[in-house]
Length: 220
Image 1 (tube, rainbow, N blue to C red):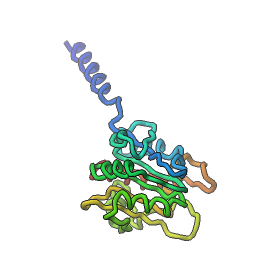
Image 2 (image 1 turned 90 degrees about the vertical axis):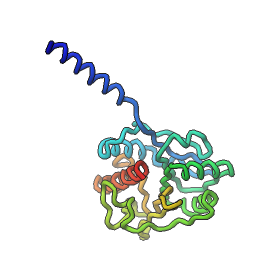
Image 3 (image 1 turned 45 degrees about the horizontal axis):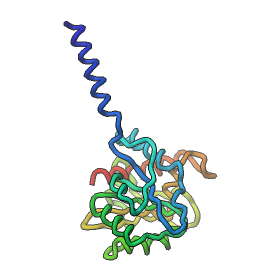
Image 4 (image 1 turned 180 degrees about the vertical axis):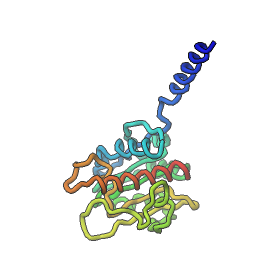
């Protein structure tokens, strides 16, 4: 009788585990037109995913995916990452699709890889003509999730002497788009040693800030 109960328990545990193999979420990088390098930071999202799965106990698919702005597949991702240095162009259909995604519960993180600012602002204005990017205060929830950033957005890569800034588009009281400027957060998520001067300490700061963004996106 004891043997039978043990067998049942083992079978039960194996059955339970089998229901937890498939990932709950997927994360994607946004592919856009205009000629900008949307494909940058190639190792960033897999590293962020691994960090979130280990520290937030999320269940993201291990590898990131690519999604186009106007695709119906956009709605499969609770967290979408956008980066680049150059030009960005959204078509009218893409504008409608991205707005629907963001007002329907999706979250976009735009990371200025230095050079993106003058291109992305007019395109996001097409998506939300009634909104402006506002700088988020240091006590904003995005800086106070699992990891605390009392001074706000960390500076990851030095390209000039400007301070990092975190901007947001807030729709009906909810942050739907976070824009990290003069920070290069995504570069900090990449494999250690990808860039000259990388340190584990700075990389950890970048990953913690990224995890805060993911946690906010999944819980708000």
